[in-house]
Image 1: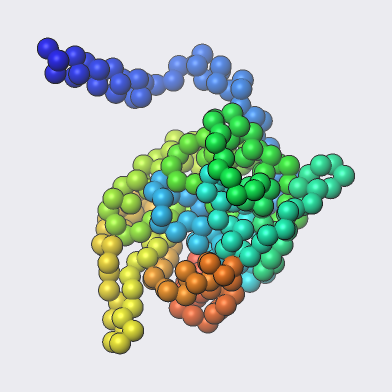
Image 2 (image 1 turned 90 degrees about the vertical axis):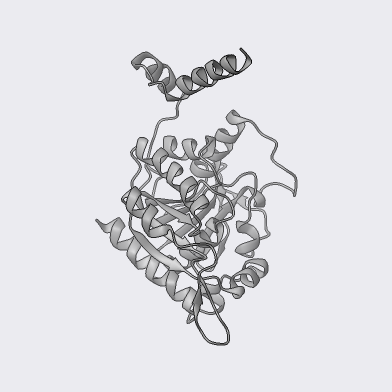
Length: 288
């Protein structure tokens, strides 16, 4: 009997999460949502996302933003990971932002990139927040900031598919999402589930970056795959393009800790050139 009860409970659970939203439910939900409006003076907004943590979203966001700026774009970088902000360290920013006469935040600039993070606005304390506070803080960082004029705003998102992602997509039109994953099947499957959320909400997927694709032997120069080689298979299943494969580079960790991105420290390195190509491919996609 115990197993029968458990099975019934699972069936109820599955029905709850797979049930379709009725028209009335959608209307009630829509009443509490913010009005989606473009950010004044911001041409395109790109989300850097992955359902899995630890795959290098922040590193990708930082080096992509710098590479876009090196390609002549006016670029902003928003750290939307409210619970684990790392952009201030990686972009070598410590000063608290100023506000203008309209109480809008003026983002500090480094490496020709306007940056904003909750880590610049609060002390080193955990953000112990629930949904409404999270969504309110996200909206404040997004709409209460002097971003204009910008060609591209890169948004570094947290792992998962939660309140922050929904708040971003409900507040402003998103030009596209850049997915980041390691070649490990476990990471790719979580990324695949995250991609489905964006599809459901009609947000274009620009492509996928295979991060930590391999490591190059210092002695022989051979490329060694250490996480697996499943990206092509999963990308085909998702129907998305692999925009770039990025190797593991020890200098990336050093640059992240010192606040000097590799694209600034060593622009002629293979790693930096990967981001140069990625930036140009994304710009072509945005033009279309």
